[in-house]
Each structure stands twice: as structure tokens, then as C-alpha cells.
Image 1: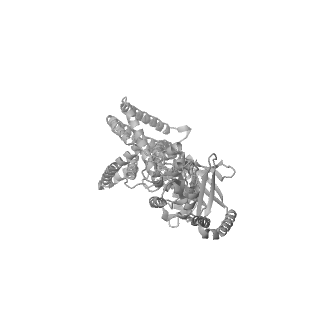
Image 2: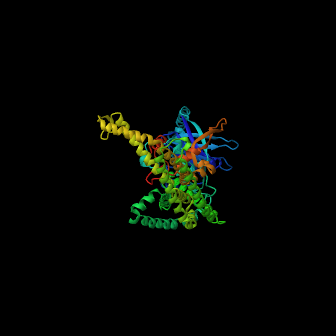
Image 3: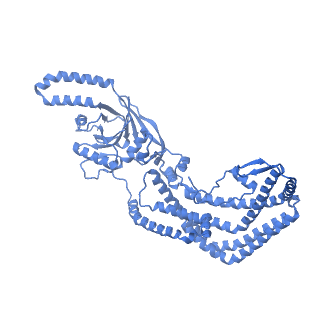
Length: 608
């Protein structure tokens, strides 16, 4: 049988004393957490362990004794061995280290062996006739016990670990943090990590404390703390209360009945700025919650949101400083109207080309002229609208640039809405062409079924046979011929304006992806992976540390960090998806039959 002892590296040169730790239930292994130095009072040690158990929730106990020989402590090892009667355990670990050697020697004593050794000690100390009459019998029992010990000798493996890294790390995949919903038993390695992590109150005892007990662990030289962090914790309480009050006022304002009226309700559901505002409101509500994070997952979610908001605001302030420096807003406003005129001129030239013989194709001239003049009229209306709004464009850009102080995502969302506003005429052209094309496609499909003697059964959602009279077949064939010959002209206009619309949708999609990337990318988790990779552990690896004759096998446990792809996949913040719900095949089908493609994001669609 192999007994694994997880031993902290910080205790390798600790003074002699008692080993405090935990036996892992269901596994033949023990986790050493600290060494309580000699001298000590056993009653105080028991009381101290009970207090640590109540604070940490870990079943702590005295695992055995630790001996590091020093001058003047020759009989200390036998004294520590006899303490197994005061701290009764199924197995008592007697670990000692000799000077000049790297490895440890470990003797595992069971409860029966400890009682026999106790009996020998009692006989030795009692003296008199009882000692002389029972000495031979005790020696015989001791010899028999020694033979049994050799037969049941356990092989011991020491696994050295760095206590601070193990305590701060989180083993992945993350187990269910709710103890009521645990279905699978924890592995030995996960139990070890959780034992060290939950035993944090045990590591508060350092050499500067005035208590009678002294111990060795990773914080025994002094607690690791930061004055700045403590001050920020104290200041965060009133700040969170103030933010919560502001959010409650904002929520009450948004719930006013006037915002539920159709135009405002519809605009708030399709405009990217309103969607980002609601998204950031939810983020701030999560951050300002007075409840502390329950478990590692919720803590990482809050930390990722906080870092994302800070980086977003920093990038927004940088963009705002660039906009308001060297009069860049005036330059943008002066260039916007000529750019709109240039786009309108290019559209007019495109329509004039379509109204002729585009690419040598012979179009239906009457329908071509009607569609061309219809779209040209809309272009003239749009140019008149742009020139009417020209005096106010600089003011709109100036006040719109102030939204960057809330973050770069607000500026990008506002830019997406402005692009949608300034290209509204192209969207109208696309809708007109798509509706006309879709009407002809559905008409042709219905007339084609009539031409073949079929019809669409609405109740059963299938195509059934049907008998038509001669007049119906004649009119249907006539309409089929007319629509079929008019289809190329309509399809050409639909194709051109669909391509223009897809270019705009692609640009808006890039803006939406940038916003979602800033909102959802786990910056805090990625920073931990780069700076402190041991905080996010995927597993461990072992290498032989020492294998000396006469000592146990010593292994060094090293933490394998989580891969970057796994970090992003595990800690990515859920966002409102800006991706289309349909697949690429469904998207191509919609384009072919003329169904409208909306790039709007829905606030109810939340994806991981």
C-alpha cells in the first residue's frame, strides 16, 4: 500500500513540532498544512485546531510529528512520538529529517502499535516487581508487533508543493460550487487543492503574534497584505451604495410609461446605443451588489466585468481626447457632407447605368425606367435632407463625442447608429427591391404549380394535385410569362442594392463585433494567465526531487497553467449576440428568395 503525503516546501526546514493537516477521506493520502513548533501545551493545540476547524470548515487534525535534530533536543523525537496518545489517530506519522540529507524518513504507526509502545513506556516508568515480572512478556509483544509492522509496512511517497500557489490557484474544470448539488465524488488532487484553499485562517498565525503557539507555513514570516487594497475595500462600500442608488433611479426612469410607447420602444430595441446602455446598466448592477462573490466563478465574472469597464472607459477617454484636440470634430463635420454628395453622385451614375443596357443585357425598358426614376427621386430627397441637416452636423458630432467618456463601446455603438441613419436611403432601396423581387418569386412559384396542375395545401402544408379549367390555365400561363420576362430587370436592381446593403451590414457587423469583444473578453482572466499562470490550473505534473537510499521517494508537484483558448472559453462574459440567428445556408436562402435581412440585435438573445 502506498501512502502519499502532500508536504509544503516552506516546512522543509521548520523546527520540530506537530504536523497539522487533514486526512483525505476515501484516499490513502494526507495533506500537511503547517508545523506547530515545540514547546507547546497539548490542550492549547487542541483548542487552536478546533477554532481553525470552525473558521475554515476543514476537518483539521494532528497528523503526526516532525523532527529536525538540533543541539540540546536529543530526546525530543521520542517525546513527540508519545504524543500520539494525546492526539489519537488511526495512523501517526513520525517524519524526521537528518542534517546533510535532502530526503525525509517517515515511520507510520497505527493505533495498536502506539498503544503497545505506550504500554512499554508505562512499564519502564512504573519500576518494581511489575516491571521485572512483565518485562519479558512486553519484549515479546513488542517483537511480535515489530514483525507485524514489517509485514504491513507502507510505502511512503512525499509530494512537495508550493503552498502559496496551491492556495491561490483554481483547478479546472471547475467543480460544482454548491455543495447541495454535488453528484460526483471529488478526486484526490481536487480535494487536496480545496483543503489548502479553505485552510486560509490557519495561515494567519505568524511570528509577530503574541500567542503561545508558533507555526511554520507560507505566511509564517508575516502576512501578505496591501494597504492600498484594504483602503479600496473600505472606500468601495459607500461607492457601491451610491451607484446602486443611481441605478435604481435610472431603472425607475426607464420604466416610465412614456418609454413603452411604440416608437420609443421600437427604437430602443434596435438602436445599438440603447442596447449597450442597458448592457452596461446590468454590468454596473452586478458590480455594485453589496453581496460578496460566492465561489470562484462569480468572483472571476465580477473581476472580468470590472476590468472590461475600466479598459472601455480608458479607451473612450483616449478617443475623446483625440476628437477634441486640434479641432478634429470640425474637420469630420466638413468632410461628412461632401462624402454624402459623392456617395449620392455614385448612386446616380449607377442608376443611369442600370437604366441603359447594363453589361450588354437587354432589360424591359418600361419597368427599367420606372424603377430608375423612382430610386433617383429618393436620392434627390435624401440629398436635400442632408443639406438641410448640414448646419447641425457639427453640433451632433460634438455632443455625440461626449458619449466616449462612458466608454469606447458607447462611441462605437453611436457610430453604428449614425451609419444606419446616414445610409437609410440605401436601406430603403434594398427594401423596395427585395419586396418586389420576393413578390415575383412567390408569384412565379404559385403560377408554376398551377401550370403543372398542383396547388399548395395550407392546412396540411404540402403540395397536392388540383384540376383547373381552361380559363384558369390560360390566365395563369399568361401571368407566368409576364412575370418571368420581367424578373431579370427586377433581379438586377435587387442584386445591386443587396450588395450595397451587405457592405453596410458588414461594416456595422465589424463595429458590433468590436463592441462585443470589449464587453465579453475576459481581460482579468487573461492577465492572470500571463502574469500569474498558476492561478488558473489545468492540472499538475510531477518530477523526481530526491531518491536517496534509506529515505522515501520525493516528488515535486508543479502546476500546469490553463490554455489561453480554455481561459477565453471558460471565463468569457455572456453577451447579447450580434450574430445572425440563421446559418449561412439559411442566409443564402433568404437572399435568393428576397426575404429581408435585419442586422438588429435583440436584447432578449443572450449567448455565452
